Image 1 (cartoon, rainbow, N blue to C red):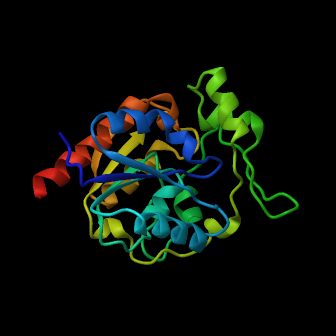
Image 2 (image 1 turned 180 degrees about the horizontal axis):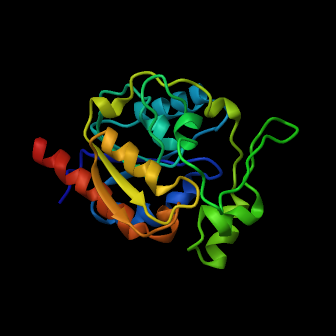
Length: 232
């Protein structure tokens, strides 16, 4: 049984909010873990890291920190000493000096990947059709309706800031590679996982397994929890 002192902090990516983790939260809580879904404003990379740090400040004790997609960069930028392990779920993980855009575009995009551009207010929305084609092609119609309804735009200021030394260089990392990802191609995910020397779980899932294959995500997080328990 996981320690009651350990908390799991889940961080959503672009075009989503904390509700995207709903199917992961309940199973983790059933294992006796405290779970928090940290909200990101998606207004700038600095704002997002600050928001995560504030969420971490409210939690007493050690933390396993998990990030989906864009949030992989955010969890790598925190400096919290309470973070004991990092879990990347189909995520981006820039190295020092790289931006989110650098790693997102390091390989040719999938044929179903949408073309992204800021609107008249400088915000990037995911085209509605892209939810079913690329963001979560394995989702049910009901799940897609929710994902579209809660979409939050992301600012270009989130993806154009050079990373400082990422936390994955100083903490153990786990990586769930989504083999059928139409947003962040699997080739890029494999590269990032190898570079950070992460413990890899690979599944034939889409870009948003936190919705469409939550059991796979729970499995990876619990593996990180067990590793943290063994070290204490």
